[in-house]
Image (cartoon, rainbow, N blue to C red; front, side, top):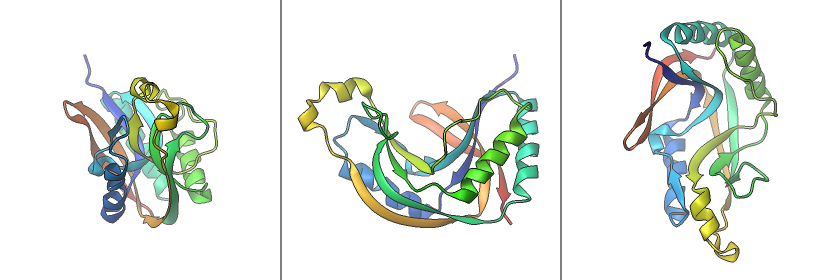
Length: 188
């Protein structure tokens, strides 16, 4: 049986942004949540799921073809809150920012380039940058009386330049997922 790889395309964050975001774990340590390891913080552009070696090769070639036409751009993160918006109970704590034209176009181009190469379903909703800081346990959340549930919201103003896009693999380990860069492509 051929080995399969759990693959996604992502924007890795600068080390200082990761360090800043990881500190919020201390602020809301009482949440019934599993916090994302600092090294794993990223923005997922396209989740592809389990791929064969051959499919992974096709993905890398397609991403490379898209990225050679892309210029560097900036992303702003403006708030930390429960997410996704309007979901109760919340599923995560995330850092999010306003919609970004360059990011949305890049995501769309990547999805179009990958259609037919691998079996995945492009997202139909508008994309806003977000970083999962923690995944909330729905079971434990429901055990907390509504008036005792912690309020999670903080305005932030984080800006960084996206200089590369990575094809990444998620390997499930005992201590949680470990993300490894398969290929990294520099923006122009």
